Amino acid sequence: MKASLARAGTAVLAAAALLLPLNAATSAAAHTVDGAQAAGSGGGGLRAVLAQPPELERAHHDEASAGPSDGGGVAAQAITCPKGRYDFDRTESCSNYDTTINYYLNGTWRGKADLHVETTVKLDPRNRYTSTYTAAMTLTNPPPTVPEALASTATVSINCNTCVATSNPGPRALIPGTRQSFEMAVSSPGRSLVSEGVVLQGTIKTPRHTDSTANLGPVFRPRCDSTARVTDARTGGCVYPQFTPTWQLNVRDNDVAAVAWHVDWAQRNLNHPWGVKGKGYPLHRTFDQALQRENRREACVRGVPRPPNSGGQSCDEYPMAQTHEGASKNSDYSCHFLNARQNSKEGSLRKSYLNSQRVLEWDAFWVGVVKPVGAKAPAQYRTGGAGALGPVGCGQDLNP
Image (tube, rainbow, N blue to C red; front, top):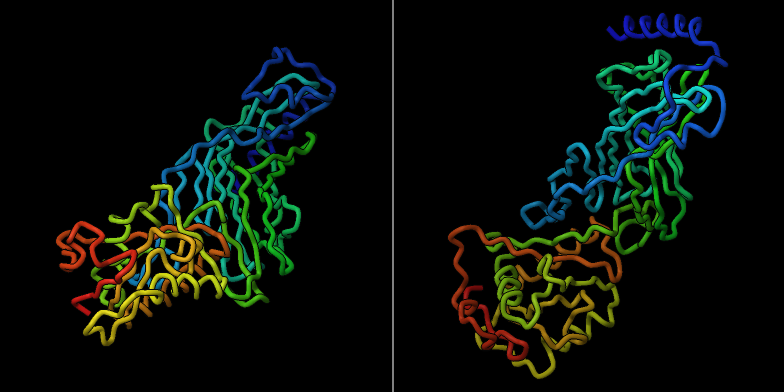
């Protein structure tokens, strides 16, 4: 089928070459199509103009989250882009839209070809040298109104300041109804922290016409770094820092249930809903060991008596000591003695998750608590007031 379409396109092109000399005038009145007239009227001869992408709306997408039930890794939910939309999370982006290739002779519009464009990017948060960028283009119905369009080819390149494409599929013929996909591996070399605008670009080549290059989708702004605390500094990784990830805890997860109930209580009873997505009080990660020690000392050591019968328990503070909103900087905190094993497990899983999302110093994150239907809080979390839970006094978990 593809071969027959290609032969048909070649035959039409040959016929068009006989009927339309390079310096011929057309009887069609010059007019604007999709705003491309100005771009196509700047010179003589035959011109093909790939229109820039339209303004796209962002698709609704809940920010990525993970929890102990996910192994502390990146959430499996993939982003999706309906037509006319774009979207992104911490490690992926996409766009989906229709555009046109407009054809001109001596500045006069001759016709067009409709083109469907999809882009996807998968950043590698554990290796800054192996992200994957993909663009797909399809000539759609109705078929092109200019015969030469049936012999057009497309190539895709990456446009950025410091990154490079380490693989590229080369040119592909644009065949009506056939999706042509271009996938390339992209490297952000070096070890420094780099943030820049990156966009895929498509170039259309049509016989006898000037080549035309345009962006494919919006410009996305990944950040690549080689922070040793997050991954091996030799590999680093890349993310979209504009997206704020959510660390999630489930009250029915026996590895972290005690911590989940404490966080749930704190988010509902403190003066500010620290970490609750959309409430305006995100937490910000810190690697500063001195600050973490001071946060713990303020929340769980200074003047805080250890409750009786607290064997096997340890002091848990919220906001966490590993944040800039910890107790040494913020008097609006809660502390509680609870199951030491679960306290330690939650900290380990949270660290793994934040590293997987490359949450760096001062990067924001949310904390979500999952409470399945029927889940009932332990008695000490149903008092409705601050009581013995904080900010001083640090109550005791009665169900360690």
